[in-house]
Length: 307
Image 1 (cartoon, helix red, strand yellow):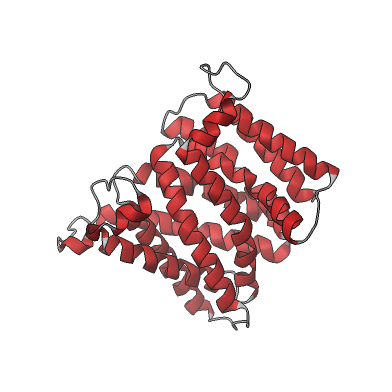
Image 2 (tube, one colour):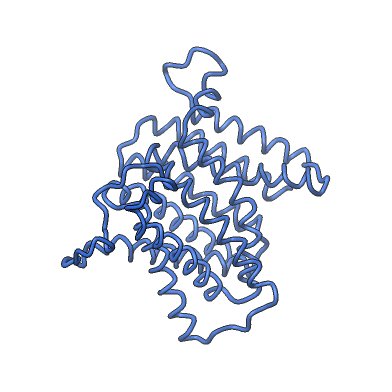
């Protein structure tokens, strides 16, 4: 059961990642935060990989890296948009819809239908999202669903959930065609390079085109100003370290167990995110959101463990 401990560590670091992004976006340019965080993570992982030895690369490596990189670029943009405009405890739990989307894509592409327990899991996730989006102002039974659909941050994270349902498969392919460190390092290098270019060209309007949010007091190397206080870079190194730890432990868990079981435990991060949102950002309705997130985690676990 060592894989379960690794998956739980991945859940913890995943929660810290989202809460940290929400916090740092208050003072750091989104493109700078994404580019710097991914590049720092790639630096850590590739340095560790060089120290231990570059692995033998499989034939499917390039395809898998390209697939997950493209998907994660879009997912990162949508995630940053959501965290800029929404409570972290309201937006991020929408990721629990990922296994539901997996069932939908399997039904369309493979003609595979969910089991009775899978259908129950879907119902529980929907019930959890209903509870998560209720408020005192709602008077009709359909109001929570209307609120969910009309909330930009929630809609963005629903799209992220769909993207992750596809990217998860590429992520494991990357690991199987390299190792638990090198492949993720290459993916983060590509992601970091993309967002760094967006950051450098932010004055030309490219930043607004991607993120559509005001750039807060950015760390702007492109302006020609020297950053004398290197402590300003601490958030980037912190994000890089968190991403590195998460990728290593989850890849190690993938190596010892099938993806559905690992992801089922990783989804525990949603509960931690709701608690962190209350503690760090003083977000309201903690008990209701915790109840909704708990239902969504329970539904996701049912789908993942009994597909």
